[in-house]
Image 1: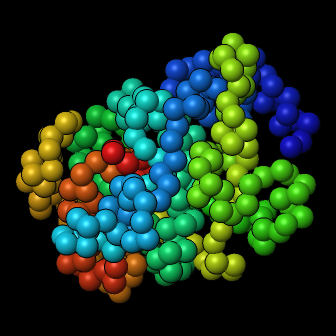
Image 2: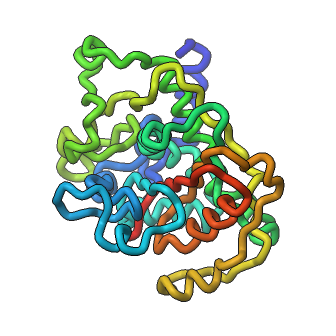
Image 3: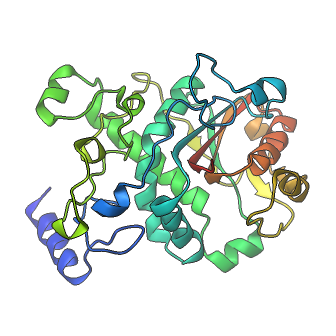
Length: 307
């Protein structure tokens, strides 16, 4: 970082210090959550490849429900369990007008995004599509949180690839970072973001909760798919679903999405991104529209999964 950038950063910290994404407690600029809130962030480990819910052990890649009645999308990934500090941060982002939190929370999506693109064999000819908002809701909110998460996660992945390919053992030794398999070890996947360990937060989080994770593992040289925020459209305004069950959600979003230009989707793999995967109804409706337009395959990715 240049001297000028450092001085500007320090000045901003003095005038407008960084705050925890969930509780606004003052934290270091590079942190996302304070130490106390970080302890409640649970990475999604050992999840079903079809619905992103925990499998609970066993060697199967998909849960019995997904093997019996699969979703229309080819695969699903989520970064974390939805709840506590992460849920608070998401709600503040969406309903509190905190667009700035989308850019910060997108750091948590970088690793799951890399895994999804690698698993789905995406390349530069494929697309990343945010779940769209209806124009009326977009005007009221001022931004689409799914679009913000998608664009900043892609930017973060691109930057990580630029400085970390290939990821060498010597790099791990120098930085003290966990290896590419850190996510499976149970360490919270915080996208390389360290939590604050301020003594005021109480006991410092365990080392596994604050270590920097390795740069995302992606196919060397594989171009990233491009973001297309206009391909998928919400053509019918749906009510806020809140705590509605699966059947009510499916009925509400059925036919709510359309594809603006089928030629842009035809023959391509499409990754649909949203902030929260609840029942899969929204993702399913998006996948139905994209597949009807000729998409080769649809995968879905969410920052958090309701469990």
